Image (cartoon, rainbow, N blue to C red; front, side, top):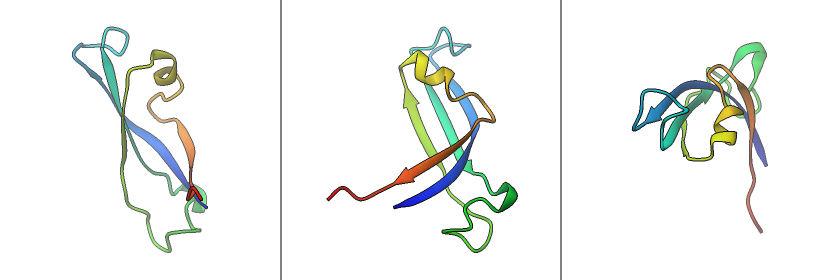
Amino acid sequence: MVTAKFKVSKVTPLGAETVEDAWATEVEMTPDYAGGANREWSEATPSGVCRLTITNKSAIEKLPLGASLTLTFSVDD
């Protein structure tokens, strides 16, 4: 299992001007290396992008711009 600290860096409504009116929203997250986060898997500044297209409005509300998240990657046995 590997955990990675990410921060929501971009929120883009699709098909409308606002998230409330969009049919879906694209949420982009990039590694958050503040305070030594991600040192477990990256000796230097971590690099990467996680991009999700979300249609569930209540899920989008939990991922505002600037939100810090811990993603967990594990292998299913």
